Image (tube, rainbow, N blue to C red; front, side):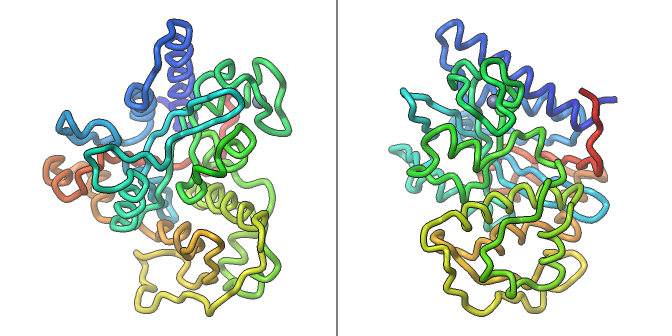
Length: 325
Ligand SMILES: [Zn+2]
Protein backbone atom coordinates (compact mmCIF):
# COMPACT_ATOMS: atom_id res chain seq x y z
CA UNK A 1 0.00 0.00 0.00
CA UNK A 2 1.49 3.29 -1.06
CA UNK A 3 0.58 6.29 1.07
CA UNK A 4 -0.11 9.69 -0.49
CA UNK A 5 3.04 11.00 1.24
CA UNK A 6 5.10 8.13 -0.11
CA UNK A 7 3.78 8.50 -3.66
CA UNK A 8 4.51 12.23 -3.92
CA UNK A 9 7.89 11.82 -2.28
CA UNK A 10 8.85 9.10 -4.74
CA UNK A 11 7.52 11.18 -7.63
CA UNK A 12 9.86 13.97 -6.60
CA UNK A 13 12.82 11.61 -6.06
CA UNK A 14 12.39 10.03 -9.53
CA UNK A 15 11.84 13.45 -11.12
CA UNK A 16 14.99 14.80 -9.47
CA UNK A 17 16.98 11.76 -10.69
CA UNK A 18 15.80 12.36 -14.24
CA UNK A 19 16.68 16.07 -13.98
CA UNK A 20 20.14 15.15 -12.63
CA UNK A 21 20.79 12.58 -15.38
CA UNK A 22 19.77 15.08 -18.07
CA UNK A 23 21.89 17.84 -16.52
CA UNK A 24 24.94 15.52 -16.48
CA UNK A 25 24.37 14.62 -20.11
CA UNK A 26 23.87 18.23 -21.15
CA UNK A 27 20.25 17.51 -22.10
CA UNK A 28 17.45 19.92 -21.41
CA UNK A 29 14.63 18.01 -19.69
CA UNK A 30 11.17 19.32 -20.35
CA UNK A 31 7.88 19.72 -18.52
CA UNK A 32 6.23 16.76 -20.23
CA UNK A 33 8.75 14.19 -19.03
CA UNK A 34 8.67 15.44 -15.44
CA UNK A 35 4.87 15.55 -15.41
CA UNK A 36 4.82 11.92 -16.60
CA UNK A 37 7.13 10.88 -13.78
CA UNK A 38 5.18 12.74 -11.08
CA UNK A 39 1.77 11.57 -12.35
CA UNK A 40 2.87 7.94 -12.69
CA UNK A 41 3.95 7.88 -9.05
CA UNK A 42 0.94 9.88 -7.82
CA UNK A 43 -1.25 7.28 -9.54
CA UNK A 44 -0.07 4.68 -7.00
CA UNK A 45 -1.94 6.51 -4.21
CA UNK A 46 -4.43 8.73 -6.07
CA UNK A 47 -6.98 8.34 -8.84
CA UNK A 48 -5.46 9.55 -12.10
CA UNK A 49 -7.58 9.75 -15.24
CA UNK A 50 -5.61 10.85 -18.31
CA UNK A 51 -7.44 12.07 -21.41
CA UNK A 52 -6.19 11.05 -24.81
CA UNK A 53 -4.64 14.19 -26.25
CA UNK A 54 -4.24 15.06 -29.89
CA UNK A 55 -0.45 15.02 -30.40
CA UNK A 56 -0.19 18.72 -31.19
CA UNK A 57 -1.98 19.68 -27.97
CA UNK A 58 0.55 17.94 -25.71
CA UNK A 59 2.54 20.98 -24.68
CA UNK A 60 0.78 23.40 -22.39
CA UNK A 61 -1.75 20.83 -21.28
CA UNK A 62 -3.14 21.43 -17.79
CA UNK A 63 -4.21 18.89 -15.18
CA UNK A 64 -7.27 19.20 -12.95
CA UNK A 65 -6.33 18.26 -9.37
CA UNK A 66 -8.88 17.72 -6.63
CA UNK A 67 -7.67 17.41 -3.04
CA UNK A 68 -10.49 15.81 -1.09
CA UNK A 69 -11.34 14.56 2.39
CA UNK A 70 -14.45 13.91 4.47
CA UNK A 71 -15.13 17.65 4.87
CA UNK A 72 -15.01 18.63 1.19
CA UNK A 73 -12.63 19.34 -1.68
CA UNK A 74 -10.23 21.97 -3.02
CA UNK A 75 -9.81 22.05 -6.80
CA UNK A 76 -6.88 23.28 -8.89
CA UNK A 77 -6.00 23.62 -12.54
CA UNK A 78 -2.26 22.98 -12.74
CA UNK A 79 0.15 23.94 -15.51
CA UNK A 80 3.80 22.89 -15.43
CA UNK A 81 6.67 25.36 -15.86
CA UNK A 82 10.36 24.59 -15.73
CA UNK A 83 12.93 26.91 -14.21
CA UNK A 84 15.62 28.47 -16.39
CA UNK A 85 18.61 29.87 -14.48
CA UNK A 86 20.69 32.57 -16.18
CA UNK A 87 23.41 33.92 -13.89
CA UNK A 88 21.53 34.93 -10.75
CA UNK A 89 18.27 35.35 -12.61
CA UNK A 90 15.48 32.80 -12.51
CA UNK A 91 12.75 32.69 -15.10
CA UNK A 92 9.74 30.52 -15.86
CA UNK A 93 8.15 32.17 -18.88
CA UNK A 94 4.77 32.66 -17.20
CA UNK A 95 3.81 35.18 -19.89
CA UNK A 96 4.71 32.84 -22.75
CA UNK A 97 2.64 33.12 -25.89
CA UNK A 98 3.23 30.87 -28.87
CA UNK A 99 3.04 32.48 -32.30
CA UNK A 100 0.02 30.41 -33.29
CA UNK A 101 -1.96 30.94 -30.08
CA UNK A 102 -4.46 33.80 -29.87
CA UNK A 103 -3.97 34.17 -26.09
CA UNK A 104 -1.18 33.96 -23.59
CA UNK A 105 -1.00 30.57 -21.86
CA UNK A 106 -1.46 32.45 -18.60
CA UNK A 107 -4.76 34.00 -19.69
CA UNK A 108 -5.94 30.59 -20.85
CA UNK A 109 -5.04 29.06 -17.50
CA UNK A 110 -6.96 31.74 -15.59
CA UNK A 111 -10.03 31.65 -17.82
CA UNK A 112 -10.24 27.84 -17.95
CA UNK A 113 -9.82 27.66 -14.16
CA UNK A 114 -12.57 30.23 -13.72
CA UNK A 115 -14.95 28.26 -15.96
CA UNK A 116 -14.35 25.13 -13.90
CA UNK A 117 -14.35 26.87 -10.46
CA UNK A 118 -10.73 25.86 -9.90
CA UNK A 119 -7.67 27.65 -8.54
CA UNK A 120 -5.09 28.33 -11.28
CA UNK A 121 -1.71 26.97 -10.13
CA UNK A 122 1.72 26.40 -11.64
CA UNK A 123 3.75 23.29 -10.86
CA UNK A 124 7.31 24.60 -10.78
CA UNK A 125 9.99 22.14 -11.85
CA UNK A 126 13.16 23.61 -10.40
CA UNK A 127 15.85 21.15 -11.50
CA UNK A 128 18.49 19.88 -9.10
CA UNK A 129 20.05 21.83 -6.22
CA UNK A 130 23.25 21.99 -8.31
CA UNK A 131 21.33 23.63 -11.12
CA UNK A 132 19.99 26.21 -8.65
CA UNK A 133 23.47 26.80 -7.16
CA UNK A 134 22.19 25.73 -3.71
CA UNK A 135 20.88 29.22 -3.06
CA UNK A 136 19.26 29.54 0.36
CA UNK A 137 15.77 28.01 0.27
CA UNK A 138 14.53 28.79 3.79
CA UNK A 139 15.60 29.43 7.37
CA UNK A 140 16.42 25.72 7.59
CA UNK A 141 18.74 25.81 4.55
CA UNK A 142 21.83 23.64 4.99
CA UNK A 143 24.24 24.68 2.23
CA UNK A 144 25.20 22.15 -0.45
CA UNK A 145 23.15 18.96 -0.35
CA UNK A 146 20.31 20.69 1.56
CA UNK A 147 17.34 18.30 1.81
CA UNK A 148 14.84 21.16 1.80
CA UNK A 149 16.28 22.38 -1.51
CA UNK A 150 16.02 18.88 -2.98
CA UNK A 151 12.38 18.64 -1.88
CA UNK A 152 11.71 21.88 -3.76
CA UNK A 153 12.51 20.25 -7.14
CA UNK A 154 8.74 19.91 -7.61
CA UNK A 155 6.87 22.88 -6.10
CA UNK A 156 3.48 24.56 -6.48
CA UNK A 157 2.72 28.29 -6.70
CA UNK A 158 -0.71 29.95 -6.91
CA UNK A 159 -0.77 31.44 -10.43
CA UNK A 160 -1.82 34.76 -8.88
CA UNK A 161 1.66 34.96 -7.33
CA UNK A 162 3.48 33.85 -10.47
CA UNK A 163 4.25 37.40 -11.57
CA UNK A 164 6.98 37.43 -14.17
CA UNK A 165 8.57 40.69 -13.01
CA UNK A 166 8.60 39.72 -9.33
CA UNK A 167 9.39 36.00 -9.37
CA UNK A 168 12.86 36.34 -10.89
CA UNK A 169 15.25 34.85 -8.33
CA UNK A 170 15.60 32.14 -5.67
CA UNK A 171 14.22 34.19 -2.76
CA UNK A 172 11.00 35.27 -4.49
CA UNK A 173 10.39 31.78 -5.90
CA UNK A 174 10.89 29.99 -2.58
CA UNK A 175 8.80 32.52 -0.67
CA UNK A 176 5.80 32.28 -2.98
CA UNK A 177 5.74 28.51 -3.59
CA UNK A 178 5.72 25.25 -1.63
CA UNK A 179 7.17 21.76 -2.16
CA UNK A 180 4.33 19.60 -3.48
CA UNK A 181 4.90 17.00 -0.76
CA UNK A 182 4.45 19.68 1.96
CA UNK A 183 1.14 20.91 0.54
CA UNK A 184 -1.08 19.40 3.24
CA UNK A 185 1.19 20.32 6.17
CA UNK A 186 -0.87 22.13 8.80
CA UNK A 187 0.23 25.80 8.64
CA UNK A 188 2.54 26.61 11.56
CA UNK A 189 1.09 30.02 12.41
CA UNK A 190 -1.97 32.09 11.73
CA UNK A 191 -2.37 33.87 8.38
CA UNK A 192 -0.63 37.23 8.04
CA UNK A 193 -3.31 39.89 7.61
CA UNK A 194 -3.23 43.63 7.03
CA UNK A 195 -4.91 45.04 10.18
CA UNK A 196 -7.55 46.83 8.09
CA UNK A 197 -8.83 43.48 6.85
CA UNK A 198 -9.47 41.96 10.27
CA UNK A 199 -12.81 43.66 11.01
CA UNK A 200 -14.00 42.58 7.55
CA UNK A 201 -13.68 38.88 8.21
CA UNK A 202 -16.81 36.83 8.82
CA UNK A 203 -16.37 34.74 12.01
CA UNK A 204 -15.91 31.39 10.19
CA UNK A 205 -13.27 32.87 7.91
CA UNK A 206 -11.45 34.53 10.83
CA UNK A 207 -11.46 31.18 12.61
CA UNK A 208 -10.15 29.39 9.51
CA UNK A 209 -7.23 31.81 9.10
CA UNK A 210 -6.34 31.83 12.77
CA UNK A 211 -6.33 28.16 13.76
CA UNK A 212 -4.42 25.12 12.63
CA UNK A 213 -6.09 23.28 9.76
CA UNK A 214 -5.81 19.76 8.39
CA UNK A 215 -6.61 17.92 5.19
CA UNK A 216 -8.10 19.97 2.33
CA UNK A 217 -8.31 23.00 4.60
CA UNK A 218 -4.57 22.80 5.25
CA UNK A 219 -4.01 22.68 1.47
CA UNK A 220 -6.18 25.79 1.09
CA UNK A 221 -4.29 27.60 3.86
CA UNK A 222 -0.90 26.74 2.29
CA UNK A 223 -2.12 28.48 -0.86
CA UNK A 224 -3.93 31.52 0.56
CA UNK A 225 -1.31 32.20 3.25
CA UNK A 226 1.28 32.91 0.56
CA UNK A 227 -1.09 35.34 -1.14
CA UNK A 228 -1.91 37.11 2.14
CA UNK A 229 1.81 37.41 2.93
CA UNK A 230 2.49 38.95 -0.47
CA UNK A 231 -0.46 41.30 0.05
CA UNK A 232 0.85 42.39 3.47
CA UNK A 233 4.35 42.93 2.10
CA UNK A 234 3.29 44.92 -0.95
CA UNK A 235 3.75 48.65 -1.27
CA UNK A 236 0.65 50.70 -0.58
CA UNK A 237 -0.72 47.95 1.59
CA UNK A 238 -3.55 50.08 2.94
CA UNK A 239 -6.55 48.55 1.29
CA UNK A 240 -9.31 50.58 -0.22
CA UNK A 241 -12.00 48.30 0.94
CA UNK A 242 -15.41 48.13 -0.57
CA UNK A 243 -18.27 46.19 0.95
CA UNK A 244 -17.76 42.49 1.41
CA UNK A 245 -18.55 40.16 -1.40
CA UNK A 246 -21.49 38.01 -0.47
CA UNK A 247 -22.65 35.23 -2.68
CA UNK A 248 -26.39 35.07 -2.45
CA UNK A 249 -28.41 32.00 -3.24
CA UNK A 250 -25.31 29.88 -3.18
CA UNK A 251 -25.29 28.82 0.44
CA UNK A 252 -26.00 25.20 -0.29
CA UNK A 253 -24.36 22.07 0.98
CA UNK A 254 -22.44 21.56 -2.26
CA UNK A 255 -21.15 25.06 -2.94
CA UNK A 256 -18.18 27.06 -1.64
CA UNK A 257 -17.50 26.86 2.10
CA UNK A 258 -16.83 30.59 2.51
CA UNK A 259 -19.50 32.80 1.00
CA UNK A 260 -18.74 36.06 2.75
CA UNK A 261 -15.22 37.39 2.07
CA UNK A 262 -13.53 40.82 2.08
CA UNK A 263 -13.61 42.57 -1.30
CA UNK A 264 -9.98 43.72 -1.23
CA UNK A 265 -8.24 43.39 -4.61
CA UNK A 266 -4.62 44.31 -3.80
CA UNK A 267 -2.62 45.19 -6.92
CA UNK A 268 -3.96 42.13 -8.71
CA UNK A 269 -7.21 43.76 -9.72
CA UNK A 270 -9.33 40.85 -8.61
CA UNK A 271 -10.93 39.74 -5.36
CA UNK A 272 -8.13 37.49 -4.18
CA UNK A 273 -10.09 36.08 -1.21
CA UNK A 274 -12.78 34.84 -3.55
CA UNK A 275 -10.21 33.69 -6.12
CA UNK A 276 -8.36 31.58 -3.51
CA UNK A 277 -11.37 30.33 -1.52
CA UNK A 278 -14.13 29.67 -4.06
CA UNK A 279 -12.47 26.35 -5.08
CA UNK A 280 -12.86 25.09 -1.47
CA UNK A 281 -16.21 23.34 -1.48
CA UNK A 282 -18.40 21.25 0.78
CA UNK A 283 -18.35 18.56 -1.89
CA UNK A 284 -16.34 18.13 -5.09
CA UNK A 285 -18.27 18.49 -8.38
CA UNK A 286 -20.26 15.66 -9.96
CA UNK A 287 -17.46 14.56 -12.32
CA UNK A 288 -15.19 13.88 -9.33
CA UNK A 289 -17.86 11.82 -7.55
CA UNK A 290 -18.50 9.96 -10.79
CA UNK A 291 -14.82 9.06 -11.18
CA UNK A 292 -14.58 7.97 -7.56
CA UNK A 293 -17.61 5.71 -7.93
CA UNK A 294 -15.86 4.02 -10.87
CA UNK A 295 -18.86 4.37 -13.19
CA UNK A 296 -17.59 6.88 -15.73
CA UNK A 297 -16.86 7.12 -19.41
CA UNK A 298 -13.47 8.75 -20.07
CA UNK A 299 -14.36 9.94 -23.55
CA UNK A 300 -17.55 11.62 -22.44
CA UNK A 301 -15.73 13.19 -19.47
CA UNK A 302 -12.97 14.48 -21.77
CA UNK A 303 -15.52 15.89 -24.21
CA UNK A 304 -17.12 17.88 -21.38
CA UNK A 305 -13.80 19.47 -20.39
CA UNK A 306 -12.00 22.32 -22.18
CA UNK A 307 -9.46 21.13 -24.81
CA UNK A 308 -6.39 22.14 -22.82
CA UNK A 309 -7.23 19.79 -19.93
CA UNK A 310 -4.90 16.77 -20.02
CA UNK A 311 -6.67 14.77 -17.33
CA UNK A 312 -7.97 14.67 -13.78
CA UNK A 313 -6.21 13.60 -10.59
CA UNK A 314 -8.05 13.06 -7.30
CA UNK A 315 -6.07 12.83 -4.08
CA UNK A 316 -7.47 11.88 -0.68
CA UNK A 317 -5.54 14.25 1.54
CA UNK A 318 -4.15 12.69 4.72
CA UNK A 319 -5.62 14.31 7.87
CA UNK A 320 -2.40 13.91 9.79
CA UNK A 321 1.10 13.78 8.41
CA UNK A 322 2.71 10.38 8.87
CA UNK A 323 6.32 10.64 9.87
CA UNK A 324 7.79 8.04 7.62
CA UNK A 325 11.18 9.58 6.89
ZN1 LIG B 1 18.03 24.63 1.09
